[in-house]
Length: 393
View 1: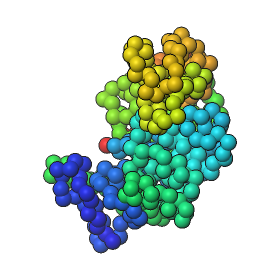
View 2: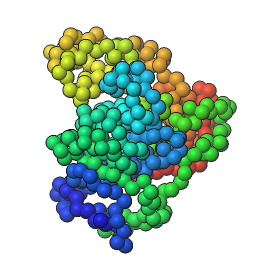
View 3: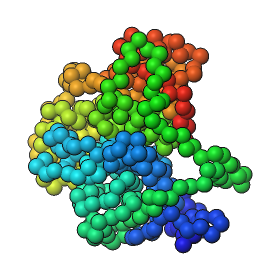
View 4: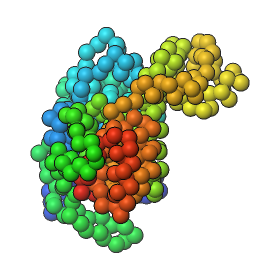
């Protein structure tokens, strides 16, 4: 089949809509269940590229959680610690397959943003991954294959309408890509640049050391940025994204946005959050929202009403600014930061330092590179100039 009719385009009024292959070629994917929309397939095609490249670069199963053509999270399949299991709401006594760990991590990077995501898996979707997905609010999944049990589980989601796409893992697109904007056709060479450790060898900072886990985390950051709407930066730690700032006009705003998400990721591991007294009947999305409010500045206002009773069995104590700062100072260290283009000012490094960043990979080439390097040296960071720009639009 080389053409597929879609429900509608980006919005319901944009009909008709379809995807197709030119030259009579077959589409490189098969819809096993559900009916895709235009944005579903944009997310599917971009997220598949991301996890495929993560798999090739790290040798580990990879997963991504996509929303509106940018990743909310991306990760490789490293084991989950007991704390990770608690903050990601999975069985603390169970052992999970590498591909399940990868998606649980990707989904957990920013659970607020992952609500209603599109899931991408580099390896076969197994029953463990499907069982986790079954209980999450998600629009669809793309993977190279599915076990029989996983497929049966996923077909029960969304009253049997959950979108399940099987991707041809051997498919390679043409080297030139085109798209239309306002009736004008754009054409360019596809961005097939390979992200490898070779791009981490130009290190202008006084500190030159990149431990192996930092190299892996920087590759995860850069490959994630390759499929994130620009401007964008990505904080990574322990095999996964922990904060992604996408689509901002100012790079320092990306750094602040992603840094705030990274801070929240660490704060969710604090005892004050882990021990929140949730009611048994609270749904996962409501629990995520409550945690976000509790960590944020709105909690004090909420305490003045009875709204907290909707999610908690008793009133939790305030998580004070001093307690948050103390926890972050203790928890944040060795964080990695990637940027899809150069840092124009040292303010990005200043903000990154506040979230425990020790290792940086950025394009380089700013007229103020000396200021950026000087700021990195002030905090003892190791920074690589990749000489690769990763704009994505």
